[in-house]
Length: 603
Ligand SMILES: [Zn+2]
Image 1 (cartoon, rainbow, N blue to C red):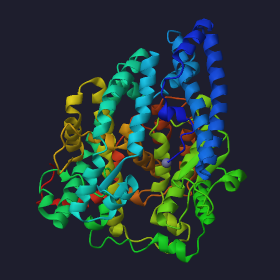
Image 2: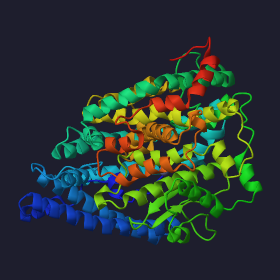
Image 3: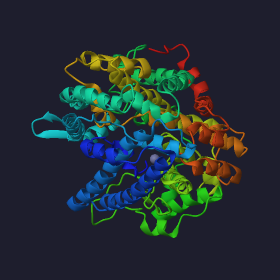
Image 4: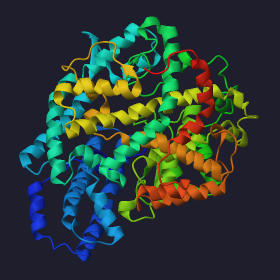
């Protein structure tokens, strides 16, 4: 993941000081191209300063958690959120003007930075602020207490979901966690009403339309794009679903139907969003790739710093400049012994120029080896676009940032390890099914989930789904897209969508679906540029300066141009294309078809 330094983008609530803003608007100079340019310049200068302050406060908090650092960081966040909201609202003053492209785009980015727009009525605005905080708080405090003196938080439950193979225990904790949703429903209904009111005041049809407007096309066209991408990739998902269902049926018997949806609690994850935790249950017999990177790294006594040097070396081999000296001085690579820190890996650019850092608690494992490559992908993206004007220092759309990190991670192949001298010889490609299946359980299984969270919310915001059917409609979509179903009845007294963080916390979700699609499209294009003709899962762009140049071209654009321009710079295509994921998993698709022969497919 990446630090959302522009935090107001992730969690903004346009609630602050409506009255104060009206007063400012009354005194504001008349809208002209000159005043628009002056407004944008001022916004960039102020926001940059606030973002840097916020990054610093956040860095200290994340690497030294105390009551005080938490408060300081919350203060800094508040300040940039308030300013972001103010600029977003004020930007609408220039709506009717014909402006140069650059100024027009900056104004548009300011306006679209909100994910939640509060109504201008102060009482309603305050109510929405309170409700939004209450919903996120209720989720954060959520617990399941199987007995009076034993309570499980989400971390405990996640472990059980991942490792338990006891269907009864799994269903018990699954239902226990989902019970946190019911009490959130009343607030959620009101949140939808108020958020829509605010969105309409900004000129959007509803909050869902506001979210869909961030993609350089009409909300309708964007929704149609997502449908098209899903249709491209659906056959692969359906094959994977059929195979996994069969294997789970072998394990759990009639609890798993032969040809219906898979019970939602048996896939190793609370939301059945990734299935890699059930890999041991579905692994093919001769799946062992014949090497274990974790063991290799450990036996060579690799230390955390060397792990990061491998990552830097990858980018240097593509022609990127080495990381700055301050990266090595200021990053956090290992878990400190003397204080609390946030270990979750993240990538930072604290001064929005060249103060790059990563924050990780590195273990010497294959997983962290790949994660380092992913995080550095964010860092090199940040450095490349930090030559742009302030408002363009972000990824082309919100799917691109995660996609870049993951694209680099896709190049961590056996051949790459051979070139680093970590492996003598790459295994035969006939051994790839295990590796591909593992990756598909993570990346292919995620696609329908990544899609449906916002399909659901768009319908809720538009009124197509009404409160009387909130739970019913949720499970209809989960069945339609994912082919999963609950094993215990879910009535309207419950509210299962709220048992997912992003729903309770008002965080749009489509970016994860886009990132999942885009990373394979980037990888396929760069592999082609690098002249790789073998199977895509064996292509690494390591050492290829042509691929590096192409990547750099796209990264350096930031969000200065509509995202199809950025996509074209790296892939030559202006449309997102999910056939790349089909190409990548082609050997697995063939293998799945053989396994599924004579067995039911679909639900
Ligand atoms: Zn990331």
